[in-house]
Length: 258
Image (cartoon, rainbow, N blue to C red; front, top):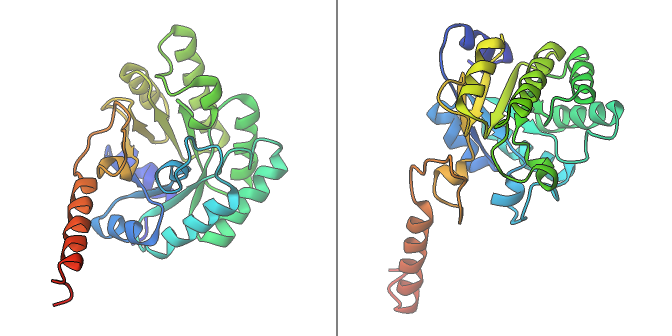
């Protein structure tokens, strides 16, 4: 049975942890789905891990749609959520509706994710959800604001913590079905999780969120440098390197093909 946004909310009520990972192509998505990952996020982090950019900012809506469609073709059960990239939803509500609508129509994704919870963004989320477009929110460290916030932990002062709490609650009131909490203190994440009726998905936000998400390339050891909150579960970079070296040597020694 396919996972729905309603099921995600019910899992919070049941205190059933929600497993989320990112994907950027068909092959990775198919593996994650077959393992039983609950939410597969086509995150704009693919700008960095798949396309080689320094930040998430350069990726376009067309590129996100291209990758999300490939991911969706590999998924039968998980809820597929696609990030709206930088400058595809911030200009106006009509731009956000058009961009989110394209994602759902052209990729088959189940929902979109937007960064920020300030009043203008909450209004945008409210309009999207009103017309039937499911939205996942994202507060704390928001990578699309890297030039303003950097990649440092957010919410360490009382004022910052209060702002992030207010933004998360505003997203809930606007109709978001879940909120990502990125790189904030664990006690703040616990407070937000207890206050919101919708699930929180943590990344570098401690153990008390309703679910957790990691960039799959980080989890698998495929990236050069991981954020401080990542746990690396495998070193596929080393495995792939060794396999390619072995293949190259056998070709040069005329041992392949046999």
